[in-house]
Image 1 (cartoon, helix red, strand yellow):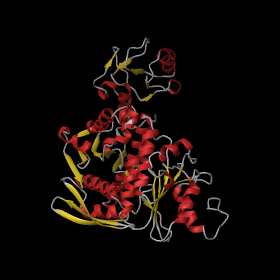
Image 2: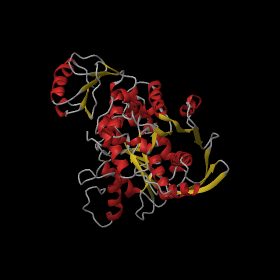
Image 3: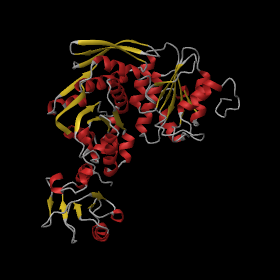
Image 4: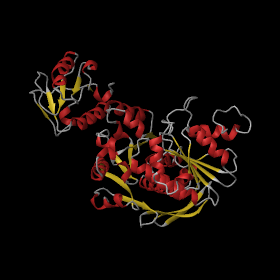
Length: 484
């Protein structure tokens, strides 16, 4: 890990980790840290994350030979090197990494955004609001956070601080929180969007999932604040136990920040934003109640940070689309086209219900069936498609482009009239076929494709396929995706 001015003379572990203890008469100063014995350098702290006998003996000896001055572990290890013992080595490691990097998170406003859904959309909106207010925010996405170990994460914060960013918006999943990735990053604010049942598999139970989400509240600074969705019953249950100042938002239940949808069309919606004694109209080209909730979460956070309502509205209205989140694709076609990457039963139901409100013509859904969904979820998708769409096409996802027969049968089991569904395993052809069938005033929803990090000729994303067809279908009959 690179050194900086804060760690040039070395750091004291007993000052960073006050709950730990040394097994030596003299405390060495550390200049950096490493979990790899082969990469240890002079002055390093060797961190024992894997406490097998092999690691404890052979690799610790190698780390000392390469210059490590101390060992951080959870139990006593037979070796001659000074050892510092802690109860949770992963949490301690993350805190040490932040200290070695100069504690850059302390020099910025750090805002953690978590929840089952809405993390990315809320961070996009909050980023736009802060920019409209003249600030220079940075964003750490869930995907980026999951890729970083504690060392790389500390470096990322240091780079952001050196680049002059005023705020760090951190999208964090429950899994990331459980793995202590953000230990050592005190938060100025924590935003809790919602707590739904779909994301409990990796935690084993809803109780464990909620416990993981609650941990973000323990990361708040003493003067930090929480933002909570009052309409989400599981989030609202946490309110009596939150010790920090809290601001709530909602549409249906009473809250400090509220919204009332005034008008909604396929291309935009308008809602009245109420904040205390002030009210202001907001017009956004992103439609749906989910987007309104995300706007409220970003608004509540910005208000606590001291941003005025005028800048908040400018920021919200500057966001014309959020990729993959009920994203409207416009190429002059006479029908509506929306893309929603998520494909869980709940998200699909919300998307279809929202689009049903803005058309009295056919609502067509191209539904990608993720193989990781449970059999029950796939059956639920079938029920959602039959109840809320006029025509549907079952296909593969962006990363698993061929729909397996087993997955298709599970979805069809959720239909009372399975003949209503079309099966088209190739996703690109399914999209093009559905667009070719669409008539004036219809709406086509392309859902469940999953996130896409890159698009190339062999793996074009849903939007690229749709735009190519819309722009070239009548001219280029050689397009391999055109319906025959």
